[in-house]
Amino acid sequence: MSDTMIHFENVSKIYPPDSVGVRNINLRIKPGEFVSVIGQSGTGKTTLVRLLIAEERPSHGKVSIGGWDITRIKDRDVPGLRRQIGVVFQDFKLLPQKTVWENAAFALEVAGVSPKRIQSTVPQVLKIVGLENKMHRYPRQLSGGEQQRVAIARSLVHRPKVLVADEPTGNLDSLNTREIMDLLLKINEFGTTVLLVTHNREVVNALHRRVVTLDGGRVVSDQEVGRYYL
Ligand SMILES: Nc1ncnc2c1ncn2[C@@H]1O[C@H](COP(=O)(O)OP(=O)(O)OP(=O)(O)O)[C@@H](O)[C@H]1O
Ligand SMILES: [Mg+2]
Image 1 (cartoon, protein in one colour):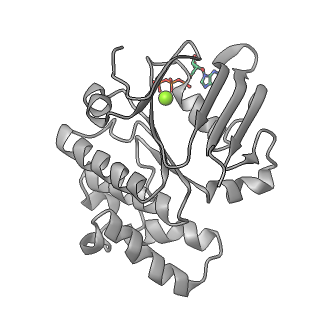
Image 2: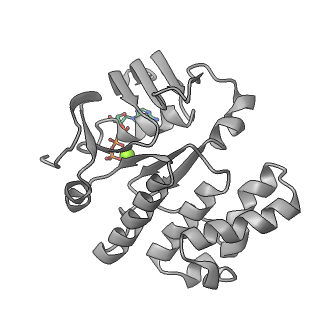
Image 3: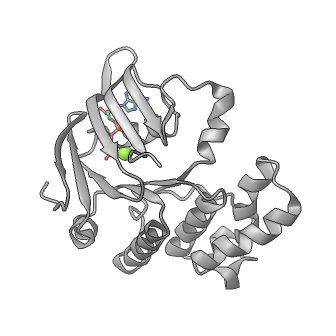
């Protein structure tokens, strides 16, 4: 396997007409790394995530994932990319009319996976996040932390190589935050590369992992064992 999982080379994103998302980003993340991205509001963290999942295309430079150059990825190839990257957001983005089980199964159904494989995969991911006993509940019947665990389960159904989490604990209290962080670390231990965007000082300082700091759309610091010093 190549020693690069995520590669940003001289990447800039200018939102038309002239709003700078990120500027000249150079970032190489190895398979199995756990990297936190921090920075003040408006410094380009979410832009980096959107470039990685091809929700946006770079204005300049090159983005690749697992050796796949996605800089100018075609719309028809985006679903294939999304199956290789699990994504988790601050606001969970669960389907309210679907149960925990159905939320996790949905991405597999959309991808045309056989009912048999759905029946075997869904319990596995719900077990990883510790929600096997609540699979028939609806999102509104769950705590915020539990809802985020459903979102994480859903992000894992395709066995992604990379998990990207944009402020996954932004809406959670400190106990739920710790549970979600433990879960992300467990997923990382299974071998998944994790990119975590966070504002949470305690989270970053407890991780003792690599920290990339953005400011004004640029990488201003990249530390192997970083601290949150903003
Ligand atoms: N669709 C868009 N059109 C124009 N400008 C945008 C767009 N999306 C983001 N920007 C700008 O790009 C810059 C970076 O935004 P981004 O959302 O990446 O920041 P962020 O670091 O995620 O901030 P936050 O911590 O508030 O989530 C900001 O100046 C923002 O105003
Ligand atoms: Mg953001």
